[in-house]
Image (cartoon, rainbow, N blue to C red):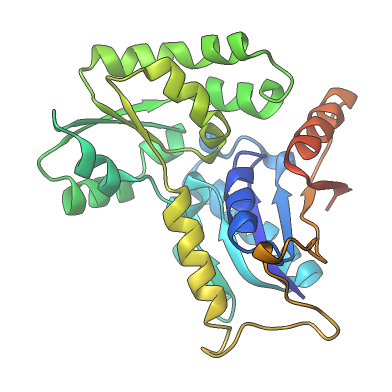
Amino acid sequence: MTDFAFIDSGVGGIPYMKTLLQRKPDASCVYVADTANFPYGEKTHEQVVSCVVSLVQKICEKFEPAVIVVACNTMSVNALDILREKFPVQKFIGTVPAIKLAASLSKKRRIGLLATRATCENPYNIELKNKFAADCQLINRPDGELVSFIEHNAFTASRQECLAAVKPAVDFFRQENCDVIILGCTHFLNFTDIFEEACGSDLKVVDSVDGVVRHALEVYEGGVTGGEPPVREGSEQRSASEGETSPYKAKLFVTSISDPSEKKQYDTLCARFGINFEGLC
């Protein structure tokens, strides 16, 4: 049994797993990137649902996770309700654009959403806006090209190349007179510091990492039946404050590798974050 499984179309959701492990270093975690179906952001609703259901079925059978974190906005806004219907016993945590947080910070009442096309066009964002940011104007920018750059180049590119990659999006929101940018695709979370440098002091950058991780830990600590979290036989629970090494290691799996350059990218990413690259799922 695995404590947490994280899923995304690629490696964009890694910061969710990294943050969770900083708060619960004894957790066993697997991350599965559905690279065979990347990018999800250009798929129809029906295609996204089909891919995600198939992926979750495989993960449940192979890893038996206590909690699945859907670390992808496109997956969440299109398929989360359906996943809960099809897998009623499984605990799911979704990720959605941080529109509520952005609205709380915006003085101009003009907030920008940087995401995939599938996320930008999903009606759920209108519901979030109407509920939490009714007096704000939401400016959408779908940017599949930037998502692709981060997936395939971010961890081997220079900082200047990364800054150049985000500049068109930042310039767009500045021209639209926004004062907050929502990183509405998990891939962008790997570039949070890049965005903050490019935005300077006039544009705030927000995301959903803290809220999602906090909720995932709350659900896990409640256990699958509302009691204590599941403990594997022979396991030890260790506190980060004790300075001990966790008995579990985070693992990254992908569903396809098309060329050797992708393997290099994953090896570089895993070395940076202290993750074991396990290859194909």
